[in-house]
Length: 456
Image (cartoon, rainbow, N blue to C red; front, side, top):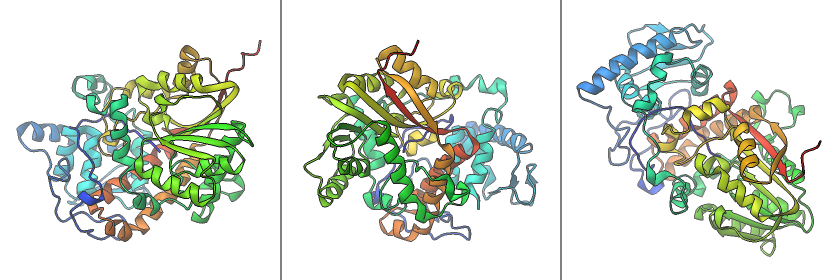
């Protein structure tokens, strides 16, 4: 899974892995959200430990506070302040954002935009019992939160992606490892038994997706994989290339069909566990998991499948990604990818932004639009999009289950060495992602491509 968010500003910071986290878990508040950390080590969390200070930061904070209050006065939520005042148009059942340290919150967003929104939550400057609900309101109004004249000035102060985080071949493994090599045990605490870290595909017969139970997740993950394999024509004797191994579930299910699988990943942690799972299932002779950049793949394959990996490629490298697939795909072959997408106009407006998600979660990542995928493949390859299916509501349901599981396992996560700041960061990431799908700001698509000539 790879997400990105809206514009913000900040300096680059490395997210510490478990062995670097130094604070004890402070416990959970009544809503299950990890409680605010009592102390924050600035060496571990340099962007979180202290709010910006100085005259410039204070002036920016005052301005940001005025803009924020003007925006929330017309939004369907409630923002509660320590003095008892409440802003927003929401009723008693609306999501509530509780300000704990409003001055610190305002300085952070004034200095760092939406990066400051995430960092202020990590620091405990504000709370929310329904974090995804609060963030959904902001996501649904993202185009109107800031007055249009000020939006036009954002290119003057928003930084671009640091050079060391661009997805050039020598950088990409570092970018990937900062997320996927955190700890297999961390991910196992909130993923299901398939260890699938992408949107599931639930049967509509399960009823409302807002209430699907945890027990339905593993089967829904396998249904997602099976549909992709079906669309790519994977069966007995198929030579399959998988770009982005994850923890091996797709390779396992393809091997069970009789396919020979060559799967590439840049995560050493994922590769180790995937190989272990594949060997335990008896498919070691059918599946090769290589620690290799997708651009270095050689050979010929009857099918190519890639699940939520294009988001980590980077805007300027999408042509290379599809050219690589085009180069290795055998005549008559098919491609099936699953991709998180955003509206084309928003994609263009944010393609040079450096965001909270880049800083803390996915360095170098960027979401495509469907139009961008169609355009890139038409201009740079012989591949053409033949079929696609949107399933954003399924991702919202998947993320809800991950959130609930992550919060329920907070003690176990803390025992792995991940402190309260990390846990609040991860919860913000999961909740922000769910808010994007619930609001319709984001979608996820299963897309089928091949080389058939256009029908006249």
